[in-house]
Length: 427
Image (cartoon, rainbow, N blue to C red; front, side):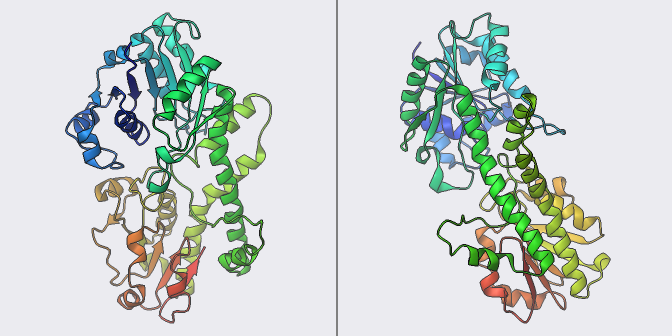
């Protein structure tokens, strides 16, 4: 073999990975079952909109939907989606399908690395057997497996692939050493060698479980403070003067990691006889927050003398986090549904998201340019940078009488908290 790398799955994780390996001088094949995506990449266009198109256009990557290209590779990296089902159980059908495809095309001696989030044990239990079934090979003899969890942060240029330590694991010491050397060619921050595959799989889960728990704590505090008539941010600011107090802010929790990864650990823990109640409760709190935000809006409209059925709310920011345009798993959707259940008219705007995709997904009117004329309330749900530059004091005069602003993350507090022209509230 010539040391070629094949990246399977060219989404938010796989495409940047392929680009980085290509720029480091490796021969790279990019494989995806989506022919339309492949054609876009072959034209030099990034369908994920996460990279500059010129990086795709200038790369030497062979983009293909032909699975036989896999057989040319010494390293096969799997970056397919790993969602949870309606019961919150891991759905690893894409991992299993990728394994079966690999098995039909793998050459002896190749190493397969899984980067997708899974429960501890899944690389050995799901991926390796799938490869064995269709290849007739034996893992550890004819091919090898490793696990190196992705740590991509969409919209965060300060913590790219090269800037974050890469966890690497292999089924034995030789595989570990080989994969560590491979990833060191693209990661400036260095590589952490996990003692075994299961430790690396669990580490990926706990990274986001920890964030989920901490955010759930301040979200529950916010709910309690709102009921007590206290300013949550003022409470946190005061508590934060202690040297060992951790700085977390309340807000909506969305995306493809934090709302999903805890269920992988919960699932595997329960299969082995223990229910991690704190992890489950943190999920319950954070999944409730979109409804809490909607209830704040409903109470605020009533307090401002508005009739709910005659009220119009402009939602600014529909993506799951600032700086990105991805509305999948956006918690704002649940907030909108709650408002609509009270016959409140909801209009949306997002400078990063595709307006037609939002219309189809959320079922609301979506403006190309936000109009504040005659609206009763603004919900700043996802504070994209574009929203922080608006002159809200002037915009308030274009709204209806006794306007309301609900600021989920509190970004406008310095400008609106003391304003006489608006009822300003933050979570």
